[in-house]
Image 1 (cartoon, one colour):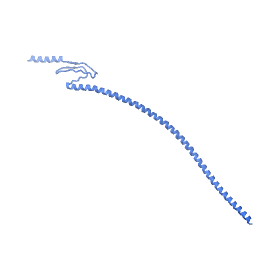
Image 2 (cartoon, helix red, strand yellow):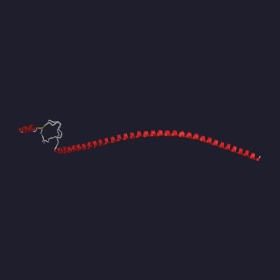
Image 3 (cartoon, one colour):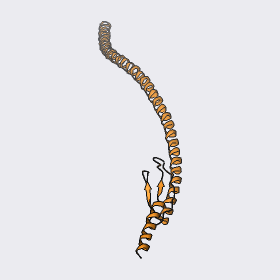
Length: 178
C-alpha cells in the first residue's frame, strides 16, 4: 500500500512537471489575448505583466464586452470626427460673424463721424441763425423807436398844421369881418 501511495505521489509530481504552461511576455500589446485551457492541479508560469484567470462563463462575458468595447471605440472615434466637424463649422461661422461685427463697427464709426460733422454744421448754422435773429430783433426795436418818433413828429406836425390853419382861418375871418 505504501508503494501505491509513493507511486501516486510520483505520478502527481510528474504531472505537475509536465503540465507547466508558459505564457510569453506581451507587454504593451493591448487587445491580443490568448485563451489557454487549464485543468486542476496545472502549474502556470507567468512571464508577462497581466494575466486574467477566469472561468468559462466569465470569459464569455469578458469576450463579449471586449468586442462591444471595440464597437464603442469605433462609435467614439466617429463621434469625435463629427464633433470636430461641428467645431470647424462653428469656427468658420465665428469668423464670418466676427468679420461682420468688425464691418458693422467700421460702418458705425463712419456713421458716427458723418453724424458728428452734420451736427457740427447744424450747430454752426443754428448759431448763425441766432446771431441773425438777435440782429434782426435789435433792428426791429430801432425801427419801432423810429416809427414811434415819426408818429410823434407826424402828430406834432398835424397839430402845428391844424393850429396854423385855425390861426390863419381866424386871421382871415377877422380881416373879413372888419
